Amino acid sequence: MSEPAVAVTGVTKTFPVPFKRQSVIAVRDLNLQVEAGQVYGLLGPNGSGKSTTLKIILGLVSPTRGTAEIFGRESKEVASREAVGFLPESPYFYKYLTGAETLRFYGKLCGLRGPKLVTRVDELLELVGLTNARDRRLGGYSKGMLQRIGLAQALVHEPRLVVLDEPTAGVDPVGSREIRDLILDLKRRGITVLLSSHLLDQVQEVCDRVGILADGILVRDGPVDELLAVENRTEVVFENGSDELGQQLETLIRAAGGQLIERRKSRKTLERLFLDATRK
Amino acid sequence: MAAITANTLTELTRLKVFYVLLLFALVLIGSSIFMARLTFQQEFQVLKDISLGAMSIFTSLLAIVATARMLPQDIEDRTVYTILAKPVPRFEYLVGKLGGVLLLLTITTLIMTALFLAVLSFREQAALAETTRQMAGLPQEQLTEALRAVRAATFNADLIPGISVLFLKACLLASLTLFISTFATTNIFTVVVTVFIYFIGHLQGTAREFWLQEHGGSWISRTFLAVVALLFPDLQLFNLADEVVTGAAIPLEIFLKTAALGCFYTLIYLLLATAVFNAREL
Image (tube, rainbow over the protein chains, first blue to last red):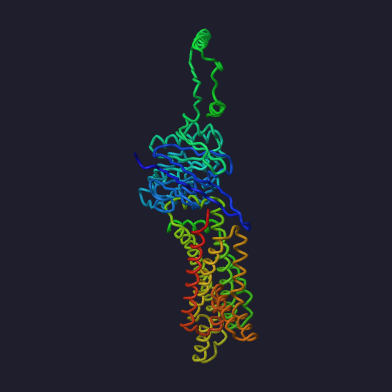
């Protein structure tokens, strides 16, 4: 079996409360594993410990107990970050840099130089659809554009793991869809994605596996399909069938001892309606 | 590290901090207009005094203000996460940031020095022409002697070491500000604390002498004063302007000691900043 992309073992993190002899437990005895190539969604209400968990995985925060590893290397080792790209929640990059300069800066931090860096910057701008805005300063970018340049900087050194903290927070539905498409594209290319989000529909759409944190405890963890399946129910969706066919199915279900819970016209999502209506 | 240094310099440049140079130029021009009424010896003394004073204030201010905002801003904007999530050690991040400020201080000091020397040279030419005109009928030896006196009053060899020491003081202040910003949460706190230390640093020499005169030199007071001196650099030592203005030579030993002290404190504060920043939860 291949090495997990992320392995969090027995991690507890407490933060002392200033001027008091108390501490707040942000994460409690957390065990979490993300397999290579998976898209893993970390869910939870505000203050549930999602961001702290991501920061521990990235080595930005030290766990009080336990260990976190990225592809077998401890997160506190600087070298473990060679395999990771990170996009924090609502980041503000250097406003005085242009899109291309921003990517060049992050590329240099990862040791890229010369023609390789130039090519990589062009590729990434193309990938996130910002080629036309490459020479515009980030101060003039929209929220969605900032998230896309953020995603591009996370990918600059071709990491095997990408960590995204609320990647679609504050982005309009079109921008949000673009970011989800990019995540699916990363998955197709075999890159592991670990993301946290409040937007449950989006997580359901892109993630293979989810974990739900509540008060710092991982209360659910498993493949999306398994966690969401209602064991004793089955959905049938058909197209171009008559009302009569529907009646026949209903009769068959009853005859077999089953119960028809709901029969309705299929609907598109509000998001799909919005995207169709605003597409230029 | 070089990428962070270059980026910090770009940031400071695009924040238009070089406007401080414009102010410096205005001070220089303004003071030379005012000094047209003085004798040339007085004029050059005052010009050097004002220029070195302005250089000291501007480079110190620039060092404190430019450094104070860097770290808290990066943390507040979460930009620091994107940098430290790359394979960049925290020490390199800090050195890169400080490097950018030191580069800015180097460029600023060089431009200020060039401006200062240009104005000094311009005034020297005017003084030489004026002296030649006034002594037109006098013997050649007297004229040569008078011109030599003008030249001696203008440039002296200690101008550059004097300016170098001011530059080192600014480097020390930048490093101190960086250290304070590693545990501060706002720019204002960093600036206030650094300015407070700046004043302690300038006053502690006088206070120490006064204390020793009044209270004698018991081992407790000596230890206390030694600790204060270790924590807060004696910034008055970096004030060699008086020697430069009067044309007195700065002894090589004093210059080397002061320069070594500046480098030592810059390094110590950088190491302290690294220790605090390494332990900081982001």
